Length: 138
Image (cartoon, rainbow, N blue to C red):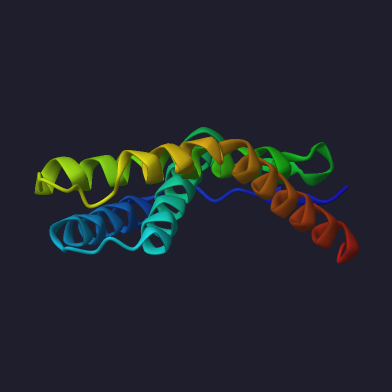
């Protein structure tokens, strides 16, 4: 059976998360209203949350890839992406407090309604990782 060793949670991962948070703070201070960039930042935030959670709870353990862990992590990351993107848009609207917000309520609602599709996409990417790891097994 194919095993994947999860590395230990170290200070380096926390520093990377702090650096990503600093990048988000810089983005929040700009006047950027690009939905694609915001979705990409939301995906990075979701990936960071899931990654740090996996390192915290499963660090140092071997996971059996046949059990579909990558699919589960993909579904969780995919479902979390529109939620983190929504909150990034909300924080930007609240911080800037323009009469016309940076992101309209319709755009924010449309991001949230795509949660099932993002979860499916994450699960499919996790399944592709599972199939790749099985195909390249020793």
